[in-house]
Length: 169
Length: 137
Image (cartoon, rainbow over all chains, first blue to last red; front, side, top):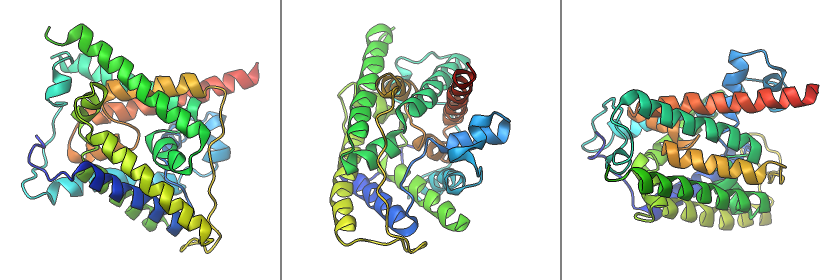
């Protein structure tokens, strides 16, 4: 799949993303954040009060347009990559495939469950990798520093466990 | 303004993709302490942000689009912060993606990201539903 695409050295990518967050803030006075936007779609799909008040008074707010743009950016990145070819695939890559079931249905279940945990966790903690880590940590906000540390701890825990139990099977 | 945020989203998705933050394997490899591409991305982005935010505050920067003085809001310590953050981290490791990168991965043709996205939506709904139930008690 995407083995041929151009990938920047880590710190260059981080530099670009850090500058992007500052650019967005300076242009619009809206701080980067992705997880709240998922509630916009909950509001479009249901009448539940929670998704029609406060943050969700307007469901077509900036967050909606922002998150709609993200897949287009991913698509553009692949098709403008020197050897990149756009292909649809259910593969995760060599490392994950060592512990993931071969059966696509079970693989879909596992990543969906991961998504559910992220959805609940992001709302309980107040943000995700973009809002808490990239923006919150760069403001040295205590809640975000704690969240960032525990995001990492949770990932470490589950991946170490997955590989301890299933790698080599 | 709509077009502006759509363009920002496109740029963000493009950068996430070029940085390699859209590779599932970089997540597993980070948590196996085998490859620190993601850690480099995150830490250099935060470092740039720390410096940039200091500068923006010092010069009393105003928004280009709205002309208001930039506000630097910080998230409060919510009651569910500890448990919620851990849950998020577990999901992060299982899905090999996050709420920002999953849509970019979908755009790249990585179809599993679509199910991650559905999952995040369902999780968000569960939280909202639980919040309403608690309020009605």
